[in-house]
Amino acid sequence: MKFPKDVSGLVLIAAGMFFLFAIAVEFLETSLVLFSIFIVYLAYCWRVLPEIDRRIEKTKGGGTDAENTRPGAEQRDSFERLKSSPLREVLTFLSITVISFLVLHLFVLMMHEFSHSFLAYFLGAKQDPWDIVYGNWIGAHWDENVEYSVQFAAGKGATAAAIAFAGPLSNIVLFFITAGLMSARTVKKHRWAYHCVFWTCVITFVMVFEYVFTRSFLKYDDFGNITHGLGISPWPIFLAGTILGIIGLYYLLTYKLPEYYPIVALHRRPLEYIAVSAVSFVIFLFYIGLRITAYPVIPEWWCGVAGIAALFIVPVAAGPAREWVKERMKKSGQRGG
Image (cartoon, rainbow, N blue to C red):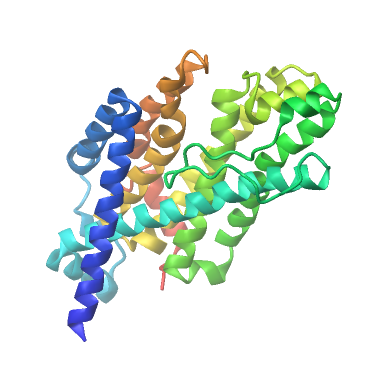
């Protein structure tokens, strides 16, 4: 029975590495600068981040990784398994993270676009709610296929604004639903259920946060259509949305990520590094940092620069070796099943 299990594990790793390579190629086709940042970031997370933590813990007189985990037979079992096959375990977890992110990202993206499209259908602005522009597998070039200009020309600015807001609203609702699910004891007891809910929460959050942070002042796109349709300044949306977004980001990084470590990464330090590195990548490079390539169409180039800076800072600040993170992990007191 071990052979099929080994084969399925290798297939999973092969698929995960293929998709990771495909993401790198997508970045290369988009921008050589972004591709270079992506490669440097992979090296940073693989070699530099663990070394930073080792030096910090050594300076503070901290113990070994084993001392930072739960005691007893459970602790010894975890580290024996990690010691016996670290590379395979790391590659498997990385593959699961990459694949589940891509699948959940497409799910949340379709929910967003169909929210626009179905409301447009119900308000009489579209004949077929299923008629959207289907982009590529990484999430680029998707669109709700709604003619906002027709609504504006007809004097239906409020209708256009409502349709434009439907997408972000669906993301906001999903964020609160997933945040609530992560607090449920049933979800916390099931490792991969928590993993999927956590990543859905991260994805739906960053979709809205990136929109507000980098695209509030556009004349088109979701928030551009909202401000145009209602005839209001984009500043209130930018300021309020950015403040609320920072609060949501703080919640994810300081409460949910430290909870994710023991539940899903099971106190294995390499897996915890993958978790924080992946979260930082998705929020600060895959979404926010990507906007540096859209200048001058999107004038907030400094948002992309801020995202790239945060890309390297957050894995250290919210990494599993920080004392405040360890305290959060202890308070969670959970282990996935």
